[in-house]
Amino acid sequence: MNKKYEIGGLILRLITGLTFLLHGISKFQGGIENTVGFFSSVGIPGFLAYIVAIIELAGGALMILGIGTRIIGVLFALVMLGAIFTVKLSSGFMGTNGGAGYEFDLTLLAMSAHLALSGSSLLSLDGLFRAKRQEEVSEKLS
Image (cartoon, rainbow, N blue to C red; front, side):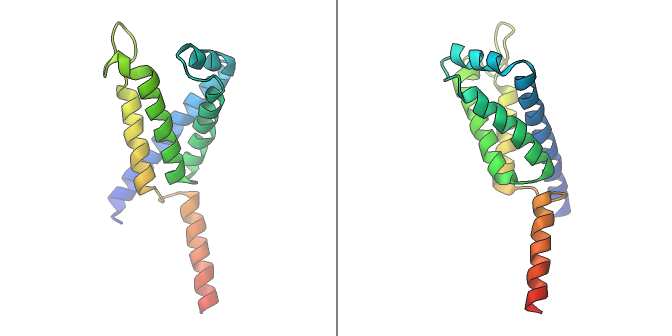
């Protein structure tokens, strides 16, 4: 693949991973009970707050490291779809009355979908492991 696309994928992977990681951390730092309460207040089962927070925290770290990028991208996309359709859509694209809109969530959804479809192997642990396996297979065949 063209090196420019790989660099672009790396940038998307790092920024997406960092964004979700920091959002996951904030859910725990602010008290996960607050997030559970918020989920319940908007009609989402409270236990999903734990699942979303773990996806954001662990998924963000894995995304930065380049482990399971495509799978994590799908999980992030599902989280963003949930956020948009359950909370943000009614506020409009840019938000109303000082409330946040769904433009940021839509951007994260697009980034996550790109990573789910294309992956990002430049400077990733998955890429490193894949190269090592291919090297081992080549040695066995020689």
